[in-house]
Length: 489
Image 1 (tube, rainbow, N blue to C red):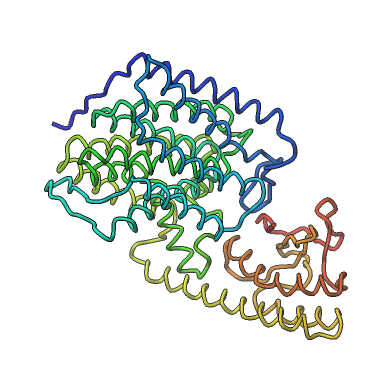
Image 2: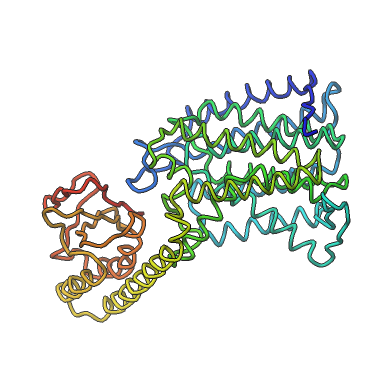
């Protein structure tokens, strides 16, 4: 009843995949060999725990392979030509890649990137690619979106790239998920009778497979924002093309189901950051892959688990398209069950019975963080009114214990550290508070603006424990706890 017919790839598709793998791997090797001092990801001891700086320009070989594949497909008689309707998608994907690539070279800021993403999505909408109506996969009824069409289209086109970018925190994860999703889209193209979709998704899958040879743990190159945005926007934009055959909600629902893991990861991130009072786009070390590693799995084992879940969800997504009503019910039930298992098994929910107490504790920590930020704002204002550096340090010394720190690292206590704009490391000690590493970091960062202003005004601040990154301060005392120090940027 629920059997799936797996299509046999044509010789043309196999050749396109193999050619894309070879080109992508060659271009990735060239990027690694000839890159000169730009676009590197610096390690830290909080989230980025790779031992050396690693290139963030992995999106370049993927983008070039995709464009070359489309051009060759369009001019080789042995392949199905790419219709003219594809070129707006090419333009919009180029724009989104350029935004991420520029950010990989020099950070643009979240607002600038969001404006660029909205701009690329609006370009694609203006050029005729939109969600104008949806078809219910269960009842087959149609619903015209009307004025909601541009809103929903743009939200879809910016949500998927950001979801993919959010999970790009572990070697091989985002690129591997992208590979599964491209193969899923190729299946949708075959099911919908669109050989051009099958061909271009095959090329993209080959590009990702070639890149993954250098991105598996331990990674030699990262996707960067350019690569992550490109993968997400490609999936979102191509899914719109596969939806033009009347399967609009069903085709988009396939992608939602296949993206079950990153969507759940995003949902958990939004909830925990919202409850704790943290910015929604603030990076942390509590994603699904971080939790798996904290449970004792190696990077390779965690990656294998997530790949397996993604593969199963991709098959469930295809079931939505091929079996309609029954497939949708099964897929939604599976996603609900996955949500419950992940929330409990990964420790996001300590106990469903004690969920109220957990939320109460989280809101208490939110109030503590708000208190720390209030102290930080006062400290920043006082840094402009103080007559001397000594007076400022005295105020800082009185303020820090109020939010859980001591002015200097003390024997037997964990030392927390934060990197200043000039590269120096500021070290303090912890008091006996129950917080996660990310919460300690957030509280200490509340003091950063005032401290930076004081350093800019007076230079050296006597009484503070400051050291260069290469030479730890002699005042730093090893902590009796094995918890690692925090290094912020």
